[in-house]
Length: 131
Image (cartoon, rainbow, N blue to C red; front, side):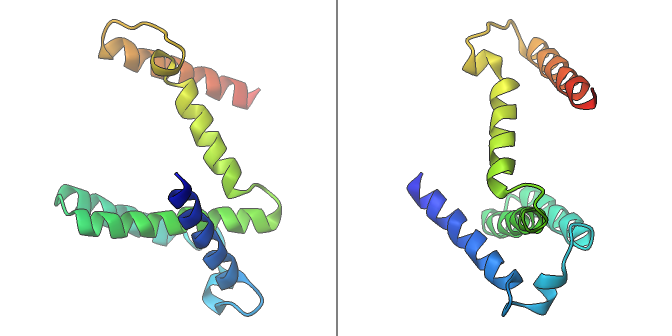
């Protein structure tokens, strides 16, 4: 786990440098909106790599996608909206919440029940987020 932390910290640092005072003009001027076309393109390239069962390109395309996730997170961090740690915490909490059969010992009978439970939890989350 420590290696993952080190690598993520290094990526965040690289992006901060790219967006910093002496950084890259292209990176500095990006916004979440301006990166949408790149996000779509990288997702499409990742799908192709996975469909082709190409682990080398899958790894590269996942890296490109991760760059965009961290870059967009840093843009929001610079605006004071949220940090990458908030993104990571939020998805982790969601995964734990949506898998009570794994993390809370809740029994289930079949995959259909799991899918229905997932949708029920998701609907409850959406209801809470709109109130």
